[in-house]
Length: 273
Image (cartoon, rainbow, N blue to C red):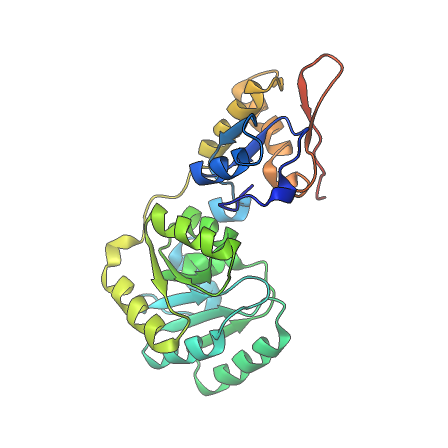
């Protein structure tokens, strides 16, 4: 579970192990099942984010000069919030803006119209190039969610939009607690002021790439504690763990682990390819 607080529907009586990414999430599981086995692990990200290109490579591919400020603006697959107004305001302040509309076609049309009047606005619809866009950017503006973890893996600071109620607000508060994140009202003037403040603190951008082995080892250890066997060398154990990665599991409302006849735990992943 990558959200910061569990919904009751996610907490099944016959789940052997809950994998969460914060102590807050663990506590939210135990309010429904005090006897639940819960392990806090490092949040994973897709391989592309661990293997993101350099700033030079990413900007060359996108036609963005080195040495100019650049921001990535996105807000989930639905493109929630006034992203077109934010993009215009940032571009007018001298920032190159990579802005992702996701599946929001109306937003994409507005962004394309904005790009025609200011070449510093570079719009995208739904795209698989997010890791590259993050690598090209100095800062990532987004709503709370998995995008935040991806930006942290690439090593970019976050400016967060408070536009998703409920679990979105809980996730936002957790991201602020983790640090290297700033909160902006979803209004252009607020966003521009905060982005420029972040850019002036140039050292907030981490130069250390995230190490995927950190979450892989935590994932292996958690599964072994409930009886899953990983035979062979360390590399073989990591490869086995990757096959059982949380990224291939069924959704949290499905029971992903069950006891086998021997009494040891087994995991039933749903493969995505």
